[in-house]
Image (tube, rainbow, N blue to C red):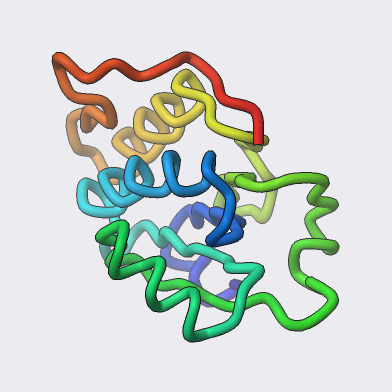
Amino acid sequence: MADALKKGPVVLAFFKVSCPVCQYALPFLERIHKAYGNDQVSVWGVSQDDVRDTKEFAEEYGLSFPLLVDEEGYPVSNQYGLTNVPTVVMIATDGRATVSVHGFSKKDLEKISADLGKHVGKPVAKVFLAGEHVPDYKPG
């Protein structure tokens, strides 16, 4: 994490493969990863499942950002005080969590996109496409 933060912000997405809201939300994070994931921004998934199930999940939902597996007992999830998944946390280069989303929040994913666009000096990428019916919020 420390090395990644030297390069730029890190977006962590905690999930379980069986979680319907995770299945819904993570493809939108893939769009953020495709727009900004580079030498200045890291997008990582943190799975609460085993390696095999996590790999199958990534293939099924078209995820190309790195997926890490939280160990038994979920020490990383516990370090972040998770109470549910999905939880998305954007961590600034100073180590502060600047956005923390529990469940799916359209507004918060748009904020992450805007903040990352500003950081890398690019126009803000659209996370949600015209014509898509996307709810404002889905609890995890």
